[in-house]
Length: 142
Image (cartoon, rainbow, N blue to C red; front, side):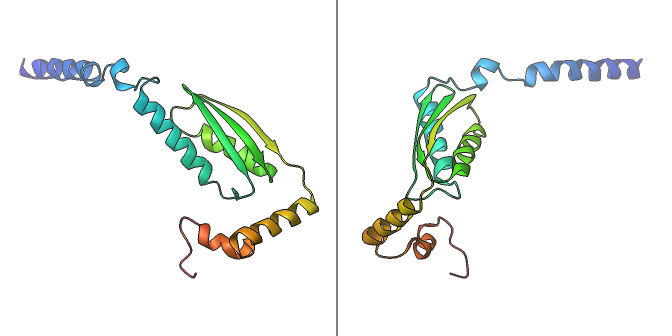
């Protein structure tokens, strides 16, 4: 008799625990229109775009957040940066869709030469030497 009561008690606990332990789904998920949620999403999208490995001073990236939809704008010099930006933003929790309107600038040796000259005039050093100063986490051997 005692074993039967214990078994019934265990079964009752197992059946009741997922229902009691599960939070209300409306309260658990943040509202997409809340200012804090939208601000957090803006910050996360910006962080992901800035941390792209081939993002440079010659690229222009912009974005717009509308609920759970992110639209990317701008111009990039490398075709891989366009797809990297889209995949980085898609991986953010809370983003349902990404519209990629990033334009790839045509490759041109003259444009690259002009970019390097402008960079040297503004920053005073060649772009290859300046990259270590712009890294978020410089290497230990620097």
